Amino acid sequence: MDTRACGRILVTAVVFAAVIALAGVVPSAVAQQQSPTPITLSPAQPAAGDTIRVEADLVFTPDANAETPQVIGQQIMLPIGAPVVSPQPPNGTLQHFEWTLPALAVGNYTIEAPSATLGFTVRPRATQLALVSERFQVAVTDQQSGASPAAVSLSDAGGYFSFFDPTNVELTVKLVDGRPINGEWWVFIASMTNTAFTVTVTDTVNKDCLRTANCPTRTYTNPPDTNQNFIDVAAFF
Image (cartoon, rainbow, N blue to C red; front, side):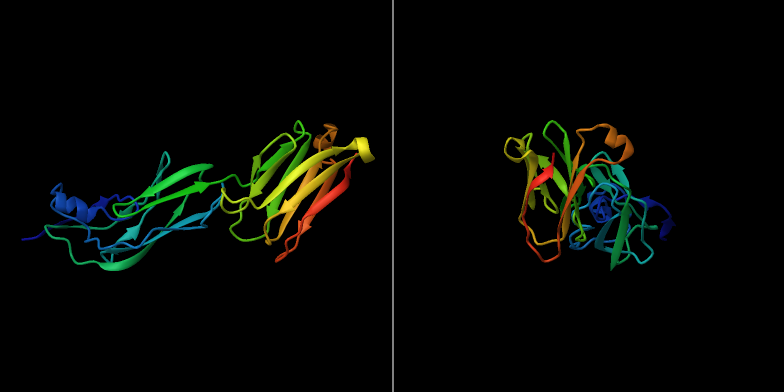
């Protein structure tokens, strides 16, 4: 006579139940796992504070459900809860599971599965270039969905921003001291994208302006579907 008990099985990304049953660790399992589809992540390039959704299609019993994810260090555990049937698991059906991850700190994360591994990076949401001994603060906002501007400094005078892939440079920014020529600081912005963005350069030479939020600023905007460079030779005194 069959005996039935209720319990939970914790899986990482896809169901380990069939693997455990085959190994003889326990005499029961939730369902048989067959060629899971790849795990997907949305947004594909998450930033700190984003709501991240993980999805996978798995063969499982109809009463199975996705439970609260667990983050252990840099690894993501995706639990599935379902009754355990002994001695033989019933035939399962392909079902769609979704998990919503908690806000993750900036860093590299991995979701591991028996047949697939998904790695992804959580990047800073608000990043700036601090140029010329940190006098000038350069920030970028990108209006395209999924973009998360991240800054990389190349020297005290310049750096670049990526929007989606940290290995793909989208625009560069450079500050030049043109005061010996015309008494002004110059701003050079070279764009390698046609997405809509805004670059804001803030001069903090007068530190009191930070307290009053009244620092001199220059804003440079690139409209959608446009590739535009900026040369401003009269940006700041």
